Image (cartoon, rainbow, N blue to C red; front, side, top):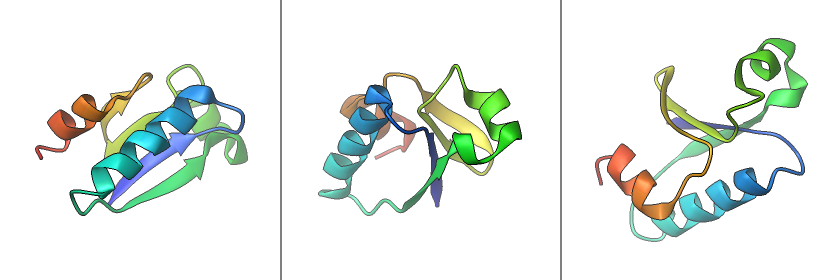
Length: 76
């Protein structure tokens, strides 16, 4: 399970979700989305990095996340 940290009104976050959706068309990929604005500690940690894709508490990608970036990071 992957975790995608986002915030409302974030164009890069919307783009990352779109890219994840495209990957999901070809590969099984489960993720949960967490709004960093609902948690003060997460907001402090990720406010300048979002969107952030993590697995097992390890950051895989952040910022401008593209389709090829996802495939590489997920070893697909």
